[in-house]
Amino acid sequence: MPVYEYECSACDKVFEVQQRISDNPLEICPECDGEVKKLVSVSSFQLKGGGWYSDGYSGSSNGNGKSAEKKEKAAAPPCQGGNGSCKSCPSAAA
Image 1 (tube, helix red, strand yellow):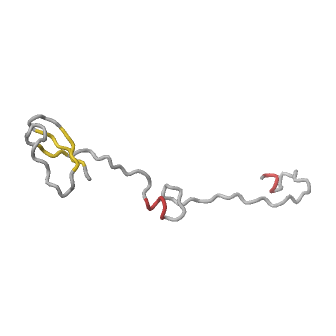
Image 2 (cartoon, rainbow, N blue to C red):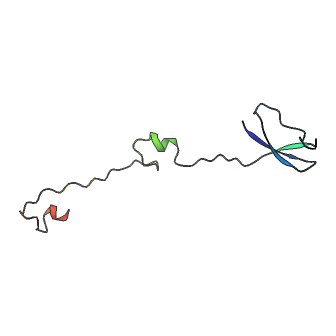
Image 3 (spheres, rainbow, N blue to C red):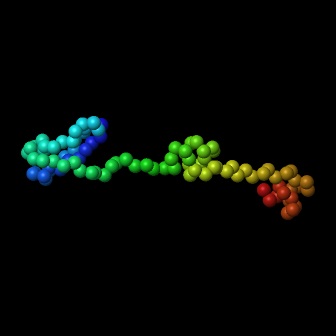
């Protein structure tokens, strides 16, 4: 149930009341029987993150809405020189 905030014009008290959306707003202060007005208060509801689409439904994702790329290093071919010490050998650079 939503929580609504009211302010009494007679006693200046600010209070909260849980009410259904379909309930009529309060008109009388429960403490002093003064006239109350409904306040607009800050919501505690916050949206954080990339959202449901980018987090799980856009293919392979890294959470930023961009597809994650796999960077695989190609395996070096075996050394052709015998002892693997030549500088031009692909396995020596690996």
